Image (cartoon, rainbow, N blue to C red; front, top):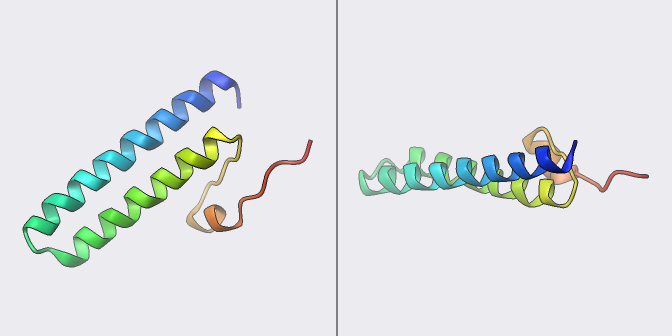
Length: 73
């Protein structure tokens, strides 16, 4: 991944996190508890992906977030 692609991906992940968070807030106001929890979970997922991508790590799945290690090289 090029530095430019990494920056774009980090920015995209943060935007997706923000969007999911705002959706969760709306669902929470409507007392749609399960939907809110789901959207908060996605917000956390995208935030974690952004953080790892910013360090050169590329998790592809939820499991990948938990098992991601720094690439050798």
